[in-house]
Length: 359
Image (cartoon, rainbow, N blue to C red):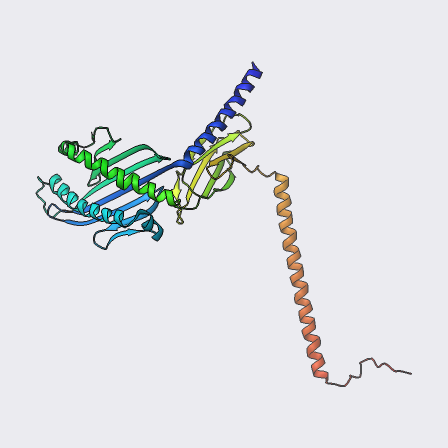
């Protein structure tokens, strides 16, 4: 029975490793394009429209109605998508200004406060695995509340707020369905394919990993594993203990967050209850830029002897430095006194100075 359990544990570890390799291959071809619109206005007029487009969480284009027209992040992106595409995007944006102005007026038709500001938001996304379209998603929101959403080209709209029932009838019309599919193909999927065929949005970088341990007086141990500076965003991190030992404790994660340089950051933690020595733990990190999943052992708790040795070393170093400083100060004072006496005596030897006679 014991041998069978060992074989089962080995098989589970082998299967997990195989799945990680397969997932890493998928991640290298996986890409996501997100387009976020925020319109601000009253029932009478549209004040502003802000659009931001991201590929794999990296911004590549933006639009601000009150400040500037469509702006592309890099010259090579503008060259790749082409002048005609950018002109189509400009018309697409201008059309949405009219659409959003009408939508805000439509949703506030029964409001008595005509000068009140309202915010209408839309979120578009499409995901690709190579040339295969994995999914499309659209969601609309109004004044901070979700209204209606749809996932997939052939799916039905899902109402999330009672005031969106009338919108559902419009969005499911033949005209709007064809417009939605055409815009998704050209501006979401098409733009992403054009850009990624030319170059990645950013140089792929492996993660820098730091593992730490903190022991508390009550016997609790906190382990931390931080991966930072990696790109693309997809990463897998988990704790392991020994070959196939169970892990007990409270796990938490920061979630994958962006750094200021467009790379990403992720931190996972494990709080081990009293009674566990915390030995044998390691952080396993898998990323597309790593040839194999990397294992980072958790530092062991230093023994009391090591702590005393460190303290003694610090003490001895401090004593040595103080002794050197005192000796140097005395030598400097003695030298200064000797120099002063020599200057007072002048060029002739004093009476007490020894005289050397040469025969």
